[in-house]
Image (cartoon, rainbow, N blue to C red; front, side, top):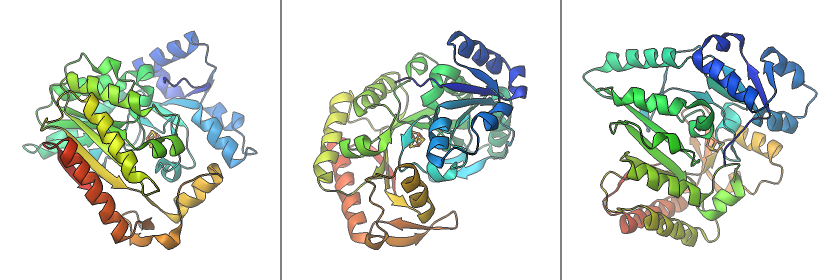
Length: 339
Ligand code: SF4
């Protein structure tokens, strides 16, 4: 499912970059209306309800410049994170972007890619002889717009020459064709975010189907990339054991060598904050997300707010059951973390 915006907004400086020019041409040929970024606020006037604003923003793409070059840490996934894109055309109800970018839910792609790469070089140089890892999926799903920008491909090629730099990305999309026949030099790890049928159907709107994600994973695997899977958020609901088992069954039937030692799994159980709950209920009034604080325990989070997590008992059940599925179906793979 390839995303095409209904509206495009261009920041004036973006027109000076090759990718900015290329995108303008592409959107003109697609007959998608293009405006100056200054028009964004006028068109998207503040009389809109928060739901209208959200829906409009999710159909809007901004072509802009990445200005801040200070990179944040990204534990446990990588040493640092950087963005080729912020925002996402997907509308996963539980997504942390609901709160993290609640006032800016639009999709913004950055065209000053060479400047972004120069900055990465500085971070890599500062840590030599250690290898520095970078995550590009912390503030977006960059594969969701890869057919428009081609930026992930360029970034993989950039990292292929870096002796001391490695790239990591994660996606819920299958739009990976232009990553298949390029020189990645095993320096990029591609992970697919997968989940049970109930979780995907109920909460992961405007993302690709599980079958498409797994097919894309098998193509990435055949192209020699280090491959991983993230199961997040793992949810506890009636029938969860059977559904997660089916997921692993499907995975094993599609990954050509399930005994491969390079396969990895990252496991993240569902949690929410009060702020996230308020935004989610406002945007998805009929949400089926289980956000009942009374059945959770409170845990102090790294961003200075409490999060509500499953009780120890449920958390252990989830951890043991999913870990055992991994051991049964992919005995030589690695579980990188459960959180
Ligand atoms: Fe968030 Fe990923 Fe869903 Fe996009 S695809 S809304 S980044 S969880």
